[in-house]
Image (tube, rainbow, N blue to C red):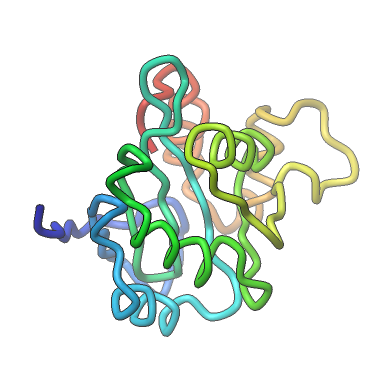
Length: 171
């Protein structure tokens, strides 16, 4: 399968350097050193992580994002993907140079290990950075983590994060 590139329009933040985000859609066995090297040049020292869950709540895909580029990696059976997963593990997931940021990182890290035998290091659960929160999924929590109402298109944020709770199969 060849990698597909999709361009998304960014509408979460009111002012953002990149109005468009390129998404590379690929299967885990198609991950290469050169692809990851190109991604890391755009990423800097931190990346965002999101997950999609399929049947029986098994992690079916993981998105790894920089400010301008997203790798949307569809997870396949372990037998088919050892080479690509090793590159993902060594260069991103377990790299001490890169902080991995995610909402519900506990769920993602557990699924990475239990479903795909992958570890993650230097991972930060974004809800845990707030001192006082009413609920981990409350709209105010999400808005605060992303920079507050002043920086965000709040209806888009609420639709994306709160609306996404009812559809767990999409990133």
